[in-house]
Length: 348
Ligand SMILES: NC(=O)c1ccc[n+]([C@@H]2O[C@H](COP(=O)([O-])OP(=O)(O)OC[C@H]3O[C@@H](n4cnc5c(N)ncnc54)[C@H](O)[C@@H]3O)[C@@H](O)[C@H]2O)c1
Image (cartoon, rainbow, N blue to C red; front, side, top):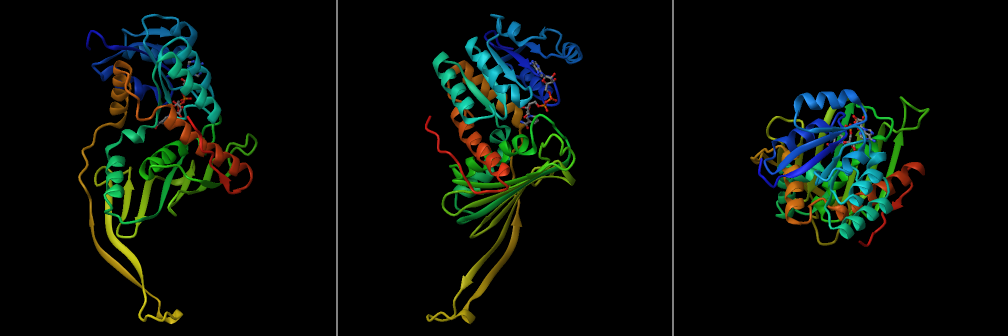
């Protein structure tokens, strides 16, 4: 660890938190100086692994500690806004797991507060630190796939059920952050439906189907589910020249590019319905080599760098606001049984 390492307090040691803590501890420019959770058992487990970290069972106490420069928040999403606001007010840099907040106005407030106190706010959109996702973007931007017609994503499994946040707010931040990055913009209109079969009493949707209309006629479809027989993490991008499959569950060959396409053909200058045929092309499949690095380690290194240098994070508040605007529109559409809902364009 370097002498001027960023002293981090990790908050929230549940299912996901330990992955972040491991990457903080492994980063030579950071120190896992403290951990915080309400549960004594979680603190006990953390102290066995990281004996030098201070233990806090109250975030306010951790934020009052002058030996903490930054906090990482991995608590349930309903707490993110209040906890991030408290951390920024205490002049700590903040990394918040996705989603940054539950409304656009909360996310905007955090973004403005971070600017005002001159501290970093960054959201944990992990996939934007994933080399496979970058390679897909390269394929789209280089024109290799041709004009992009549509994309779809399947993020399915049996569980892990949450009761504090539905499947859309839990999983869609991944897909929306990836698609916004691939297409360099947000969708204009969304339609989404959701259903709660296992816990209809609390009304937390376990499955969600959504359509996102991006500019240039590009559409995207999301299928998100905690109620599926198969674990699937797959995204498909269909272009006019080639088609790409990104399978995050594969141990290797995560990307397969199919040299397949379809094209309308006319036989005569005077078009007649019978003249229309479709030319199909089906060539080989290539799988580009991608250097695999744990995305969380890249993400934490980026956060630490931004705090130390003042650089703007790739997934800063501005980026989070755009993603939350889409999630908010999806939530509205779900409440209205799939009604087309405009995505608000937010000025920073
Ligand atoms: N980036 C990813 O791929 C990914 C994956 C899973 C979860 N997440 C995100 O991580 C966050 C946590 O998810 P999880 O599944 O670990 O949740 P979890 O419920 O398993 O863990 C949350 C932890 O926060 C603690 N906590 C609750 N209130 C607290 C408070 N006031 N102060 C301190 N600690 C408190 C709880 O005791 C618990 O240990 C969520 O925002 C989730 O969206 C991200």
